[in-house]
Structures are given as structure tokens and as C-alpha cells.
Image (tube, rainbow, N blue to C red; front, side, top):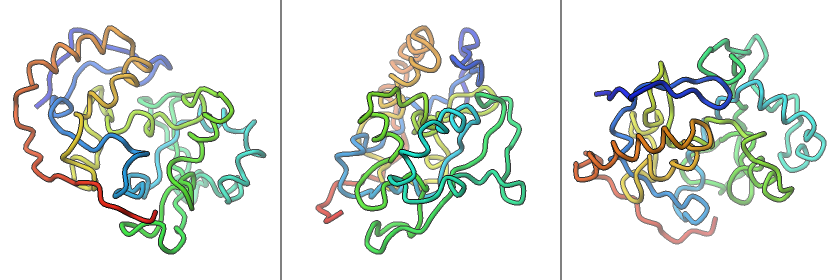
Length: 226
């Protein structure tokens, strides 16, 4: 089911433009405190991520500082080679095209859930190297981190705001407990699409607040050495 919005809302970058919403974003839940989580081991980063061309360009001035933190040469960060994914034309992405971040093997013991992950995942500690780099240097993380990562667990496609694919295929270990997908990402909705869109989504969210989400799996934190 999809719900039409009162008007179209363009992203601050011009694309995407959203005019519909999947109401499951108001009922599906997940464990929101990512950096306080002791059981996911950043498994949401295991497949890499789409990255739009403006973010790739914005990263270039930071390559020299980022390379030793990432631990992989810049030439291996993205799957932009034409013999791989290449640069994919897509009008719904900022800049009109995207590629994906590379996936690299994880050190032994880094995660019990997956053996490889996004090249920008901290190989020893937690979280995203790009995100930490931005925070430590007082940079706006939106300028250099992929939109799809900051917007997670929300996603978009064909003008619709919807849950990320991981929720559709039941492939996220932290599903089932915590805040709703929309609640957790509301600030990013405001950043990318504006307060007016968030206000309209707030009104819609109230209509679905009492509905069951159909997501009965609950993942609870457990102690972990990682």
C-alpha cells in the first residue's frame, strides 16, 4: 500500500522528488542506538552502499587524510570501473548517477554475522570512517557521506518514501525493537526534504501509531567483546 502526499517534495539537491509514502515506515521498528548497540557489529554495512557522484567529488580533497584511516588505497574505494558496476545513470540520485562502495574482507573476529563489509567501515572499532572523520574535523557529514547511509533505514524509489530493502527482505539483525523507521530518521527527512514534508509525515504517523507492524522479531543487546 502507498499513500499519496499533498504535493511533491524535491530533495535539497534537486533529486529525488517524493510524492508518496509507504506507511510501513510509521510502524516498522529497529534498534536505533547504533553506536550503543552490542549485538549488530555494524552488519547493516555488509553490502556496501550506493554513493552519488557529488559525494565522490566532495571526498577528493580528503583522500590523503582518509586513506590511512580506511586502510585501502583510494583507487579501490568504489566499484566505478566499467567492468564492474561502473557509473550508473539514475535521475533519482543527486547528480544523476551513482556507483557503489567497495566491499572488503573483515579481520577475523570483527563480526559473527558477516565476513566482509563496506570499505569505509572501521575494521577494528565501530561505525563509519567517513562519519567519524567528519565529526572529528567539524565537517558537515552530509557533504561527504552517501545520502543512502544517512537516510537509512528509509529509502526511496519511483517517487516513494519507503523502508530500506533490508526491511523488505527481513535481513537486518536489529529489526523489531526500538523507534519506528520514520522517528529515527525524521531529522534527515527535514535536512533533505524540508520541514513541511516532515510536518505532513508527522500527521500521517499519528494515523498509524496504534496499528501493529507485523514485525514480531525482537533483537536484544547482548554483551560482546567487539
